[in-house]
Length: 345
Ligand code: SAH
Ligand code: SF4
Image (cartoon, rainbow, N blue to C red):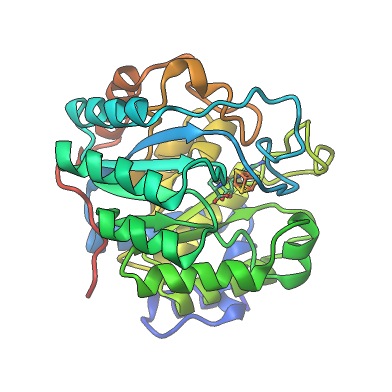
């Protein structure tokens, strides 16, 4: 399918087809500006000019899993592991609210020290002391844990599917199972979480057609927040020598997702900013409407190395908050003050 025919399909309001999605995802440098402009126009018309800030608190880099792409994988013995105490987590959350973050993303490796009840208690404490909207991103857990956290007040959950290609998923997840991860997402949805998912771009052997199938699957799932980033090979992992994804590949997918999910919350991700100093601005001008600056204590930031080259490792939450607001204003956008819940129509 030609680029312009594919763009017409996406802009027609009809359900997108795999061919059109793949044609846009694979578009060349000549067509890309039209794709970004179309996504930007849809973004203005749907979610508007406000950019939602979520403070990202990376509270533990301890992980039971061995994902082949990730620097925090269990078998990477060269990472110094850390785990914030419940009091540190609660204090950091309170500080994030004071700095003007209406919403907090609590992310970690799959760290079972944080049992269901333990994490629920932390969530309850934060909800008691602040009016932060809370997003969890702590991987695959039992339904009982997801339920406890929801009952404790967690509003949202982020769990990327990474890829829906069964063969590729198996190849990069030695101890995980695609059907299991899909089941987690369905459980989270049933429990009433605002649901975030997404993929990495540039995984070994991943094709535009496979990414198009991912988009269709995310539509089927009813994902309401969509995080995508380039895969950045980490030297201490089995995929150290892989080519990885490029900024441009990720940016095309951001734009395609905005066309396919007009009302979703789509972040300009840290991985994109790590490959291009203006990565967040470019993503915000190609469909994205969310940024997630770290509020992680400075002395732990370098240890949360999912991939190499992560930005802002020497900064603190106050500096990141100020920096990102200036960047948002510089491109003529405003910072949202509300919690930025998903839009359900
Ligand atoms: N343990 C949780 C949350 C932390 S990982 C989980 O896995 O869901 C958060 C995200 O980081 C993952 O979903 C993955 O998409 C991304 N990530 C991990 N390693 C990466 C790499 N090498 N390059 C780019 N993104 C990576
Ligand atoms: Fe652990 Fe998440 Fe990294 Fe997988 S991607 S190793 S689950 S932190």
